[in-house]
Length: 245
Figure 1 (cartoon, rainbow, N blue to C red):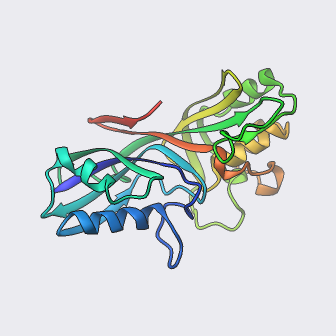
Figure 2 (figure 1 turned 30 degrees about the vertical axis):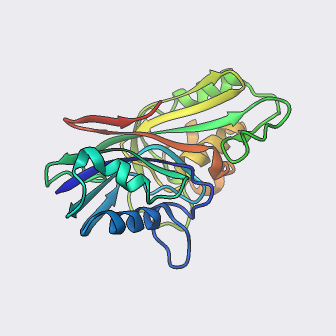
């Protein structure tokens, strides 16, 4: 039986999603829980391989399981075996050809700035504290340049395994929510560090326009810290989205 698991997690204690020998990762925690819950599990895949410290409101995994609880009880069973920083929000049976990564049509990320002049202990490792003045009109104008198909090689490390740097952005923009200013972007897929480097470049006041045609990494700005970034949702067809707002 193939399951789709919608997962949320606080990325603070983890070295990212992907399993690494001797390191705490979200994948390792989930694999341990699966092994304790089902007789067998195989073919675990994930929609977003988040980096160290990055959070998720609705990442999606697919996995083949046998000999355990039925789908309506699978999330509760897994959560009893997962660390407090990880929760399976929903588990549902899917067709055998569903694949968390390859079936995804778009992914949405949010980067959170905390703009109060004083820090908050409740925002530590949940957003990037930015007490300095922000030109929100300039940030909005910069984000408006991102929609469409562009070469984003300026926004990923120069030493990379990526061979194709063109990505299609459906939407991008900044949203003010009280003391938070959030950058939100939806695209078909992403390069490593792409969202964080876009944020850092915009905050550095660098014009994005000339960088979207394959400029080198050195022309872009700093990479924003990981702890402000959230994977918000993954969209599939025809089954709709696994999402959290």
